[in-house]
Image (cartoon, rainbow, N blue to C red; front, side, top):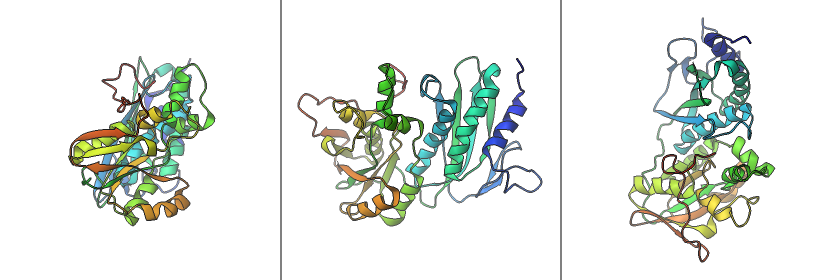
Length: 333
């Protein structure tokens, strides 16, 4: 078996995922809008106004299993999930960095497949891969994605006010529904599987909402609606009341599981945001026409702290409140 060297693997990955055109003078390395110097030097150089940065880890057998998904799907999902943090702050993506840990004997094959998915995600975002790192791993495959964006006025979690309305984009619970089916030894419905392997970073939707409405606070739904609403409440020093009857569960979820999965499943990567009363309602039809998904009011902001859930059926008062890697007894997978 021939093991390809680290630098050849990096070069092959960069050539796969970055476009050949629009290169920095004298380097032959692909650039993007806002990138002064891309991959190929000790560090990338980014031009920007107010930079927004985030990083996100994907670990084999925690965030994905190779028996469930292809490595191309893993690569696309990892980049998209990280970019969702930019959407949460209504930031425009500028560049991506990726660090990978993989066993040497399978590195060439795995990186080639990961590269297909990474390329698809970068193309959707319209940004280049400008750097990262590669190391040998005796254990699981690990992917660490860092995203860089820019925004004149980033939207934070801390702007919610008493009397505001809480809204979400799209439908919830599909990704968790896919994981539930796999764990139970089955195969998820195609729509649920697609939600898990090919989520959407709602960057365009976030910027549309910020440009045309009044968004006071926002977060992306990676830990489940209840858990992420708790983050909003804590940052804004308010109480958020969620109405289970209003939450838009994915239509292909089993009816008996839909409320809990939609409330706490996680990794939907939809937007959850707070706006003043009456602001979003008139924009719902325009938003649906533009993006093909719904805006749904799911709760309100009150004085107090934490998250309260109302509207649960009798006997279902105790719903999970979101995923936490360290308090959960099992990992995501």
